[in-house]
Length: 478
Image 1 (tube, helix red, strand yellow):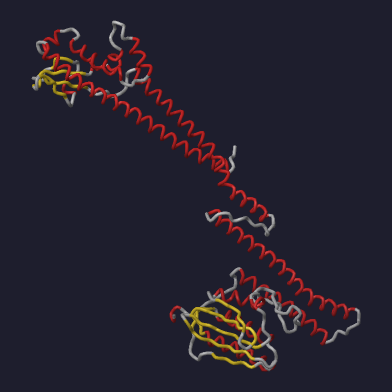
Image 2 (cartoon, helix red, strand yellow):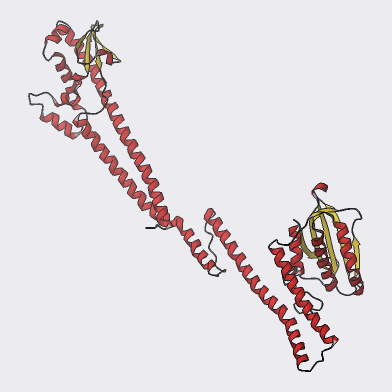
């Protein structure tokens, strides 16, 4: 069965909490065993202090160690009495009840059975000779001295417990472990109750993004997701909204592009179709003039198709760029010289300020000539008769700046932002005999960007448009 994201997050959070709870449970179990055993050993050490006092008194009351050794229950009786003194200590209710029930019975005290101290106690005389105990004295690290009237008469040693073996000790530890297990289970249930709503809350932004992405893939580019935080989900939501906005604009541009291309092709085709029908119907004679008119429309269609092809190649970076170190001032001067007759024909004055020395750039000379040719052609077509065009070239900050400033007519600020969009013309009604298809500046932008430069439009101080191109100088001259 496949789990959705919410359940996966829930399982991950619950698993993490389960591991933490399990580790805490095991740690508490270990601490309980170790701590309780340490506590039992400490109690036994306290009993050894009291037992040492009793042994000293018994030593003085009789004939020394011989009287205690001959007595069948001498030392064991003292051990039993010492342990019985702890009956007032806070043991578990089960142990206390058992102690009370067995006080009237002749059999050994339950406390004696509980601790079994006589099996782990070793008593030595003053000469360190063993007089009581079954263990080797060498197994005991520390012996307590047994005093009588300020004189050491013997030594008392105890082998510490290595593990809990008595039924009452084990019962107490078991009760505590059951409590720990219950607490661990309760913590796990609480973690599960918290993890599920937390997982849903964490996955909620992802669900919104998934739903919005589904709408986006179906073509609804107007979809947006709310930005509710400043974390990774918030950044992802902002990026998604930016992507949706970009796709929306691209879709609108695509539709406008198709409509503009259809319009651009429809006009010359309509003219061609009308003139051909007129010739076929005999309304118009097949003459040199009619053929020339048809050729003009074919030329317009061919130019539009060629511009579209060039634009498509530059968009995908498939234009052939053969870059080398070239002289930018020479390319610009040659481009200006080619269009001087057209500017003179339209009575538009040219003012050129290009340095005579070399301005080296790493570029494709043919594409730069195409770039300058398009810009000069635009100025020649769209500048009023009697106007002017200023062309300047200068080097600054490791780059080169080329400015084209023409006179009226100008364009509005809103239109300047669209000058480099494909198929955009400032005047949609401009006669196609003077205006192009609106692809020249789009191609210019792609050429400049392919040379790691920038192209911008500003209002010209002469009243028209100011086009500024920035290109990097060749690395050897930076």
